[in-house]
Length: 323
Length: 297
Image 1 (tube, rainbow over the protein chains, first blue to last red):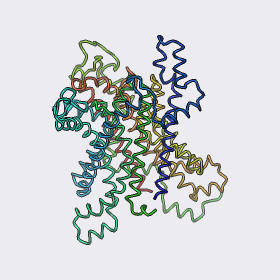
Image 2 (image 1 turned 120 degrees about the vertical axis):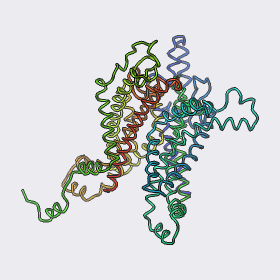
Image 3 (image 1 turned 30 degrees about the vertical axis):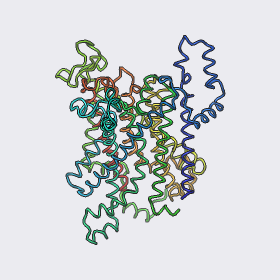
Image 4 (image 1 turned 90 degrees about the vertical axis):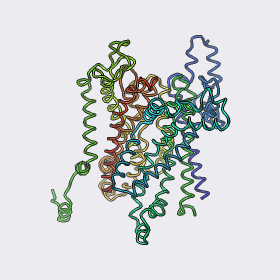
């Protein structure tokens, strides 16, 4: 088990190193240098440009630059964000908790909802309910994240003003609220973005879990349970679901890229002050270091997610636990 | 020329030959859902192909930027007009053309690279395979949208051709892993050993003996791949870094109305409906193809 963990950790480190190489290649294949926007300014004199380039090491040979780049990354340095006039690390560090909150809530809620829908479908397999739920999950599965976010914003904040329009807190009143009031205010602002991301993510969970349950049902132990006289509900809950839950752990690891991508669009549309919001706005201002920082942190999140899922799987599967 | 031996005659009589493609199509058409999907996709492709003939207006024309802008849906403009007074229906029809074309072309790029990469890794094996797979792991852990963001921010003013290329180059990782697995599994099959014994070159074995066995997973990946690219391109265009103006794609029509979502609802609703319909039908078809293929294996 310890050897497995060590090997899997080593793999994750290699992956992150290759990700760093890819982003480095992206930066250096691009025309101009990362701050050509600053350097193109005619008011910046030639000497200042040279100093800037030397300061950032852009006059050194590429291999040396790469080593310095990786070294800086290892220390958590990701350059200077021009649009925020702060280090990229600080911008992302202050945004990350909001993204993690949004993704975490959606992760838990979408798996709960997805598994529930799948159980309902399998309990009534072949029925009208099963078919219509399949249609609905396919619909959400096929929906672009940003479009559902726009529709829910349109429907539930403008047409039916149930939820606040955007942001993480009420921009005016939040400071004057009591502690309880502040928590309620935060939850109100979190509700719609989290609901949207949950709906998007739960569609693939439900589709996956339905197939997994149907795969398990013909197994011998299910027949045994049926012969023992267990009701269909008990069979589903106590036998089928337990065995079909193991692949769910794998799915959790696989769902991180989609969750993160969804969070990017949803944060943008609901002005939720997370990493996606910062990075997407950085595209508009051509704040290149911030975008690259977002790419790196996003990739690390995905790598960590699949690492955790693999370790969880190894722990949960009794067949692997002994090794 | 020696005639067939009695043995092989028996085998061919017992199993009438049908091309894998014919079998796949026949099984596919047996399902009602995939028949509907094929018909609707055909209609959307036709709409895209015939856009210049059926679009009521020029999609880029701005007839009257003051009097005709931001009009809600009406008989003259069934999908309304945008802030530049352009007809949204015409733009959605032209958008079908562009979004489908980008989806198909980018997927062709992905298939080419993915099959080549996976086949080489699987067939060569050893250190090269291990190395190629680690690189693949890294690419797979960068969400595709983020990878595209990095690329598109580095190269701000990309042409459509370059956009298609990059969309294709970020979409082959999953497929190449499947191809590698298949090649690895088939590498030691008897028919491959037989071909090797007959002196066939590596390239010939890959192209003539292994690739034809990969048609089904490739068909699945292609169908789902087009759906992915359509969604991704729409997302990028919505962020303003995909298809450049004045060209119309489903994503950038929505972008044109994004500043005033509540007032210009028709600009998000209609292109989105077309997009969801297309992607849904592609998903139905892709999953049906996968079922056909998995049942046969």
